[in-house]
Image (cartoon, rainbow, N blue to C red; front, top):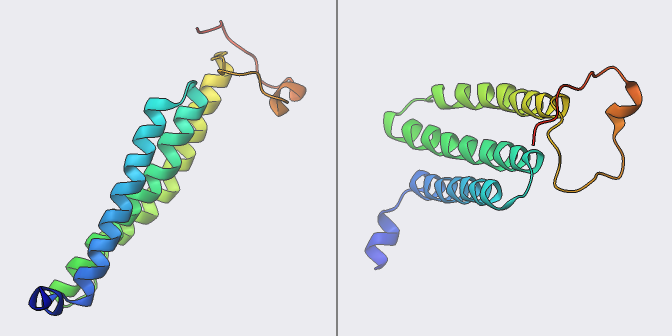
Length: 127
């Protein structure tokens, strides 16, 4: 048992921790998509924890590959930057499209900031 623990390098421990954390976050996002009642909650559950979970897995791959190739491995880090630039925008655009097409939330919201602007023309209701 002690031989196994001493043979692990710091990069392998960090990689393992990051992989487990990323897998947990991705699982939390998947459970949220399955359990939440309306489209808007599901989009939020799919976007936020899954983005951070995938970024954590990519960071784990960058740590592991950098340690074993004896150079900094930039491709996963560039993918993380691309991920954080595109996923929030895509999530927001999906929610906006659902709002415009009158996708109804599971509960009535306390206030609707976009309703006061009257700039959004609603389409036929989608049930």
